[in-house]
Image (cartoon, rainbow, N blue to C red; front, side):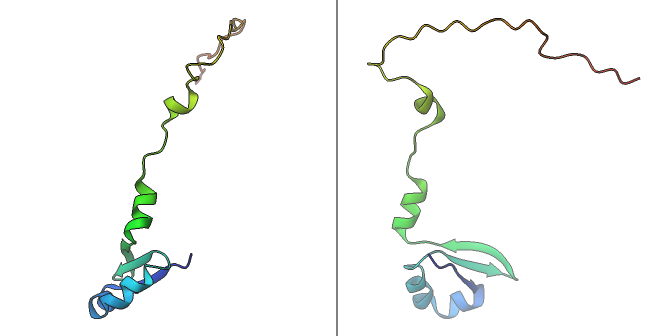
Length: 86
C-alpha cells in the first residue's frame, strides 16, 4: 500500500487528484513540512475503527467450557523488599 505525501497547497490546488490517490493508500497532508492530516477512503477508515474484542472478552472462558480447578501455590518469599538508600 503506497503512502502519498502532499503539501496543504497541493491539496487545495488539486483535490480530485489527491482523492484518487487515496484509493491506493493513505495520503498524508503536510503543513509547513510536518504531517498534519491523513486522507483515507471510507472503507479504510471503517477497517481501522471497527470494534475489536477487548482484553476481557479474549481472556474469558466460553460458557460451555469445562470447569477448571486451579489452586496456585503460596510464595515462600517476599514479592518486594524495601530499598536501602544509605
